[in-house]
Length: 124
Image (cartoon, rainbow, N blue to C red; front, side, top):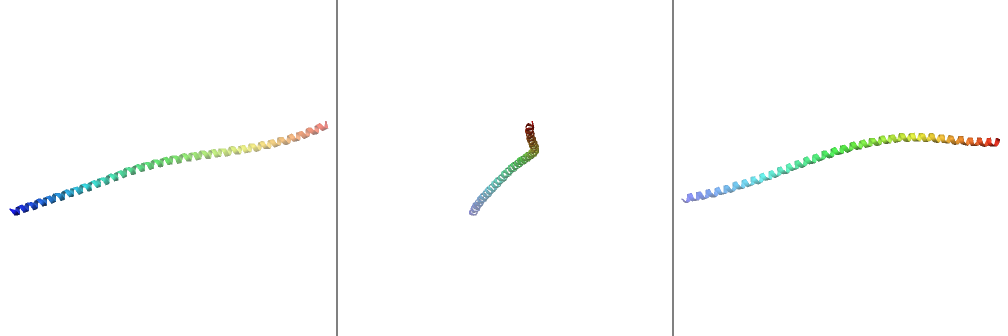
């Protein structure tokens, strides 16, 4: 009887310990599972954030390329305007030179005419 009682007591204690160990193992597994789940969620969030950053970078790259093309068109327009200005300026200089030459010629002829007129008056 006593042996049976001792056996049952030991069996009960052993089962109790076993149940405690099983609960502890289950608790550790649950904690480990939650940690893994949290890490997976963090990784997913990092992937989403990374995807957003890549999208943002691509958008900025497209905007930059668009602005580069705009700048190139502006520079081409500036170059054409500069060339047109140079041509017109050259024409202007040539016309001015021609005008100045004609003006000088006119002054010279006027001076000669005045001298001739003076001589004519003296002779008359």
